Every structure is written in structure tokens, then in C-alpha cells.
Amino acid sequence: FLLLAQNFKIKSMLKKFTFWLIPLLAIILQACAVDSVTTYHQDKTTSVLMNIDMKDLLAMAKNMDGDSANSDNKFKNFELFPKNWKNMYEIMQEDSEKKGIPMTKDKDSIQLIKKMFVKSNFENNEMTGIAFKMDRLTPEEIKNFSRTSKKSNFISATSSDNTIWDGKTLTLDTEYFNPQTFSETLKKEMTLEAKTDSAKAEAESALAMMKMFNTKFNNKIKFETKIKSIQGKHDWVKKIDDYTIDMSFSFEQLLDESLKLNEKDKKVIIITE
Image (cartoon, rainbow, N blue to C red; front, side, top):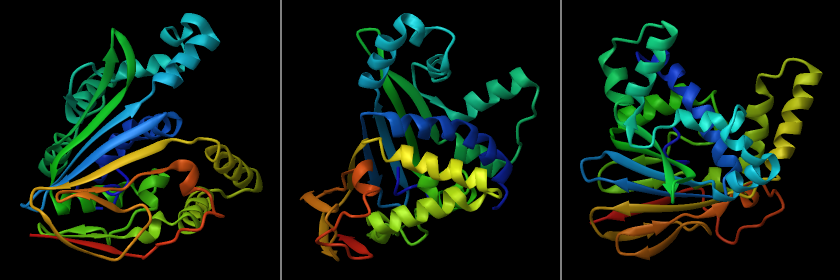
């Protein structure tokens, strides 16, 4: 998800989509773990499957508020997520109809949003988290989505257009996965819109609060053909088999400016057969 987060006709549509991204990102920060698989296809498209584990968070909410986690409080917002896969266009269309807001007729916008899906996960009739996926996004779709959403969330703000997949070679802009760089960029983005001293103080307070979360990001990068070679090294980029790269870390590590990485090349280039 971090790798994908990268204005043309789709700007107005993506602003509406951001309405769903913001609560999703808030959930991610409070989750126990985020397991994601990013698949790079030979036709240059990219697919993502993300599962957000919220078991401990939901259990803690129930212990604190009894059954209120299922009542009229902020946890009731989880009901917005369907129990089965549903694309974001359908969800936004239903929301627009309820509010009387017209939907875009732009074909590029519709095509992109229809490739994004969300659902809630359950075990023994108990909600355990949220799942999100993107199905075969083209390089152009990824680029335009990320550029439009950059000011909407800090994760996309710290990604780079230099993370590129051309069907054979993946260039990872790993500079943004160095704690010092990430923290500096995050702080800059969070205080950029703050015009008053109080607003800046609130932004810095929110940043300090984020450091309390220790979400684990377990990311797998998969290819359809064998990995031929890897140029560059980074502590968080590890080959685990001929088709898979592991890129796992915690949010605590990412925000720890005192953390010294042994290997921290600014780019890691993965070449497939």
C-alpha cells in the first residue's frame, strides 16, 4: 500500500474517494498488523491485496465500552464497509444517491474506481478487520491516483514517483523508507497547511500521538517471473524466494529518527527474467 501511494480528469472523483481513504488510514494506524501483497504483472499493471487486523483494537473497545462498540459510537462507522467484496464506485454511487450528489460521468474516473474494492473480515461472526484491494492498475492510473491524493494523507505524501514498474524491472525509491527522511517529510506535510500557531501545535501533537502506535506492516512483493538480480540494499528489503520480496517494518521503526539502518541505499532495483 505504501508503495502504491504515488491532476487530471479524475481529480473530482478522487476527492470523493479520499472520503473513504481517510478513515481507512486511521484504522491502519490503530491496527495490530497490516498484511499486504503487491503483485507486479508482466503487462506492467499492479495489484494489491491488504488485510488490516483489528482484533485487539475491537476487543479493547468492547472491554472499555461494553456493547457500545456495536452501538451509536465511532465503531459503528465500520458498518460502512460491506461484508463481501464491493468496488468503490458502487459504494460511492449509493452514497451519492442518498445525499443527492451527482456522480462523475468521466470514463477514466469510473474505470479507476471500479478497480478498487473493500470489505470487512469476520471470524465466528465477529468482525476482525478490513480488507482492501486494487485490481491491475496501470502505471498511468497509479501515477494519477497518487498525485491527486498526495495532499490527502501522509502516507501518499511520503511516496515517490520514482517507484516504477515497467513489466520487467521494479525500481523502489527506498529513500522514503529511512526513518529520518520519513519523519522529516511527515512533519513537513502535517504542518504545511497549518497557518496559525495553535494549528501547528495541534499538528505536532498529532505527530507525537502517531509515535505511540506500533502497527506492523508485513508486505510481500510478488512477481510473475523469477527474480534475476537485485541492485542496491536496504535493511527492510529482503528476497525470500525466486518470486518474492519481503518488505516488512513497524510504524514505530519508521518514526524512530534515532534508528540507524545498516543498509539504506536510496534505490533498490529488482530485475526479473
